[in-house]
Length: 353
Ligand code: NAD
Ligand code: TYD
Image 1 (cartoon, protein in one colour):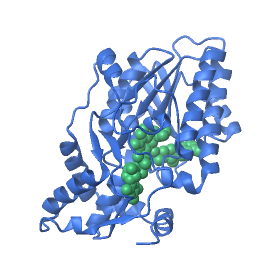
Image 2: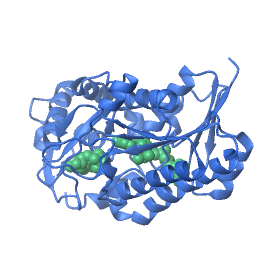
Image 3: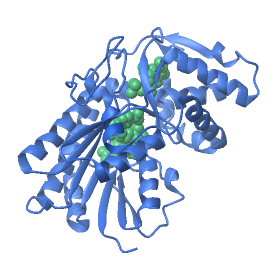
Image 4: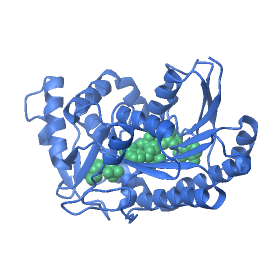
C-alpha cells in the first residue's frame, strides 16, 4: 500500500515504545514509521528484530535534546505526526539525577515541539503531536478517590515534575501556535521487554537468581497496573480517534498494593520454576523507603472507555503470568541488559541488602 503519512515515534526502542512501533508497523502499511531513539540503558533494538527489515520502517539513532539534529530530520522527512515517548522514565534514577531528567524530558520535548511548529505552523491540517504521559503527574491519592482528566497536576518526584512540565509545554504550544495535540496519562505498565529495574521485571529477575526482593517501606503503596500491549492499543485509538486538545486517562482498573503484588508474583513463579510454595516469599526484604514515595495511584479510565470503547483485554493474573513466561523464555535478553550500567545502578541503589 502507498505510504500516506509519516509518523515519528520517539523512544521506540524502549519498553512501551517497542510495543507501539511493532503494532503500528504491523497494522498500518500506509504509514512510514520512523523510530527515533538514543539507545540509553533502556533502549534496545533487540526488542524490534522481528520488524526491522520492513520497508515502511526506519530507525534513526539520535538525541531529542540535540536541536540541530532534530531540526535536520524534521526538515528531511517532514513528519505528519509525532508520538512522543522518549524520556528518562525511572523515579529512583530521577532522585539521583534530577537535572538529567529535566534535560531529556523538558528540554527534549521542547526541541521536538519547536521543530514540529516550525515545519507546520502555516498548515496544520492532518497533523498531530501526541504526548505520552503518566498518571504520576497528578501526585498521590489518599486511601480513596481516582485520578480524572480534570485532576490538577501535583507532581512529587523529579521524574513526575519533568513529565508534568513537558505536558504543560505541549498544551501551551497548542494554545499559542494552534498545534493540534493530544495527551494521554497512563498508569504503571508491565509486560515483556521492560528494563529490569522497575518493580515487576526486577523482582522476576531476582526471583530467578534467588536474590533479595527489596520492598520499599512497609509495602503498603498502591499502583494501578496495565499490560503494555493494552496501553499500545489505547495509544492507537487515541492517536486515530481522540479529539484534538484533549487528555485521556488510561488505566487498568486494577489496583494492587505492592506487597500483595509481590506475593502473587512469588506464588506464580514458585509454580513455574517448580519450587516449593513459599520459597520465593522468603526473599522479601523490607528496605529503606523511597523519598517522596507516592502512596497511591489509581486512574478513572471511564472517558476513554465511554468515548473510544477501550478496555483492558487481560486480567492482572493472566498478564502477570504471560509476563513471567516471557522473561523465563528470554533469559538471554535479560542477561544482555543486566550488565554494565544496570549493575552499577543496582549495586549503588540496593547497597544495604
Ligand atoms: P523506557 O525507559 O523503557 O524507554 C524510554 C526510551 O526513550 C528508551 O528507548 C531510551 O533510549 C529513549 N530515550 C531516552 N532519552 C532519550 C533522548 N534524549 N533522545 C532519544 N531517545 C531517548 O520507558 P517506558 O517505560 O517505555 O516509557 C515510555 C514513555 O511512557 C515515557 O515517556 C514515560 O514517561 C511514559 N509512561 C511510562 C509508564 C510506565 O509504566 N512505564 C506509564 C505511563 C507513561
Ligand atoms: P516502579 O516500578 O519504580 O514504578 P513507579 O515508581 O513509577 O510507580 O515502582 C512501583 C512501586 O514499587 C512503587 O511504589 C515503588 C515500589 N518499589 C519497591 O518497593 N522496590 C523496588 O525495588 C522498586 C524498583 C519499586
